[in-house]
Amino acid sequence: MRVILYKTKHGATRKIGKVINQYLHDCLLMNIENLDYPILQKADMIIIGVPVYYGRLDSDIVLFIQKNQELLISRKYSLYVIGILQTEFMTYVTQAFDYHILKHIKVIAGLGGALYYPDLSLTEKMILQVMNKRSPVIHKEKDKDIFENFNNEEIRRFADKIKNYKFIYKKKVSLKSSFYYNYSFLHD
Image (tube, rainbow, N blue to C red):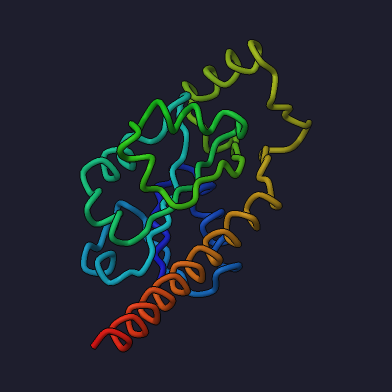
């Protein structure tokens, strides 16, 4: 069983978790606010969805990853980042985590982001206006309340890498077991 653990403020990280599940078919989606450790401990793999707010990865998810390395490493975890500036996702990740954490993440991707204008607070709208004047990447169309720049191809590739990683990992284990069996048989 795979678990997609995420945090979402406006729904974009959950939405992409659902899309990833459409490719993988057997995931349980879990909001970090409803964290269930017994389920995480039963998972074969944990996929973590982390949103970017104000140019940083969400602090609750970052803290969870930092404090639960033993659990995550044993579950071969992956990470997807949701943010409007998709090309900047590795900058956010390397600012939040050191090498000792990054080396254990099996698959990592920036999958784009979304803004749902009616859901934004006044402060968020003001920050967005200032940010957009500095580097205009968000073009709000007239009469549209949603801006999305999800990268569907990257989402598919991310899911495929997770599928292939699990297959490769199982194959390596079975080859190792087979080699050990053959080796011990020849030398007993």
